[in-house]
Length: 253
Ligand code: GLY
Image (cartoon, rainbow, N blue to C red):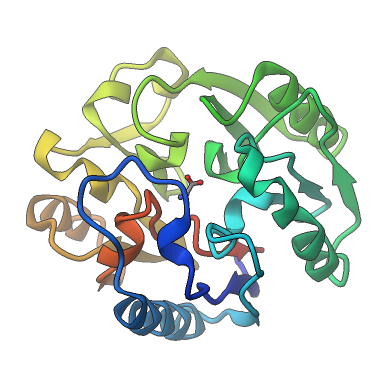
């Protein structure tokens, strides 16, 4: 899929108050801003026009914009995030997206985070996690099946979101952690399995045939190089401290 746009949001100075399970310590705001600017530059380099929203007061996770919507070429599905502290992020994302797509809203008791949703061609994998429930997955599936999409729910046993561990790195190739390597739902794909000590590198982003991976994972880098695509490494250490990464910092469409 070729993308032309992205929506992002600058981190707020309160970003350290977001949800995290990490033991890496609090993020450095100034360093995070430098990393965020490099991320925007990289999306521009990959051909995207990037909308940068202002920080959202009172929502320290709001720069992880991907969790608030799922954007297909036909429709933008506005999520009901699974974390109570993040539910108020969605109106401003819906307002930004309405310039580009018709919007459909996931209703409670359905919950879903965009970080659990992986589109590969016209198939959508929906991770069932602490943030995404069966009802939310079904609502997303129903919103997109009329446009020719199929979908599969996949239980997420480790990591925050499905895309913390599994991402597309080509039309028929997935990069995934060992825990998903033999999952029957993913069996039809060529699979590149990450070594356990580099599990964070599973959060690699494919944008217009460029691979953007987190810096500091040499074994995964070597494996991805064999795909022959331009490979860009970005330092996202400050977002990792808040359980975030490359995929959740933008909505691409
Ligand atoms: N800090 C990202 C999240 O937990 O949603």
